[in-house]
Image (cartoon, rainbow, N blue to C red; front, side, top):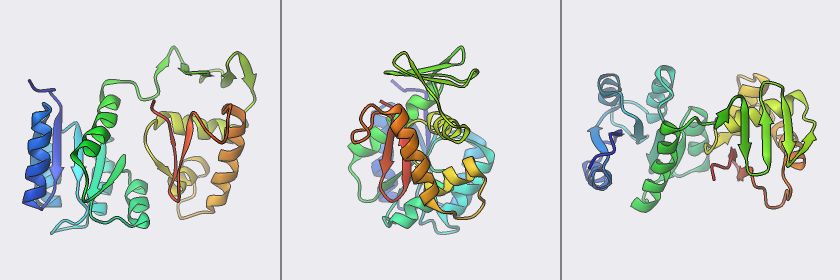
Length: 231
C-alpha cells in the first residue's frame, strides 16, 4: 500500500540510489530518480514531488546550486544526503535552504527517521496554530496580540525576541543556521556576527525555558545554529 507521497532522489551513484529506492518503496513511498542536477530539476517540474533527497556531488553541476535553484521555485522539503561531511558544507547547504543534512555513509533507519520528520510537515500546519494561538506544552503564543505565556504567566519579549521565536516556530524541526537567522531577523545579506544571535537566543531562552541547561523548546546545533523542537 502506497502512502501517496512522491520522493525525488537526485543521486548519481546507482548503487546508493537503488538502496534508497528499495528501502523507501518498502515503506510505501513512490520513488523516482535523477542522475544529474539538470535531470533532477526537470523531473521536479514534471512530477511535483513531496520530498527531495539531494546529493551534492553531481556530475553536471554543484548540488548547492541545484538546491538554491529549487528553493527559488518551491518550499518542498529537501534533505541533503552527501559524502561531504565537513561542518562548513552542512552550513552551506542549510543556508541554501536544505531542511536537513545526512552524511554518507548512513543507516537507513536514520534516513527514514529524517524523512518522517519532514513528512509530518506535509500533512500538518508547521506552526500548529489554531485561531492565531500556538500551544506546545507549557508555552502559549497569541501571534495576533503578540502575547507569550509560560503556563498562565505572561512574559515580555522584545520585538527582536518575538521575531526570533516566530521564525523558529514557523520552521519547527528544521535546523536554522546563524547566517539564516541573521538574514531573516536582521536583514544581513552577508555573513554577520553570530555572537549577536547567541546573545539574543540566550535571552529568549531565559524567558521561555524552565531549565536553560535542559531546554524544552530551543535546541542548539553546535557550530551550526538552532532549531525549535518538533516533539
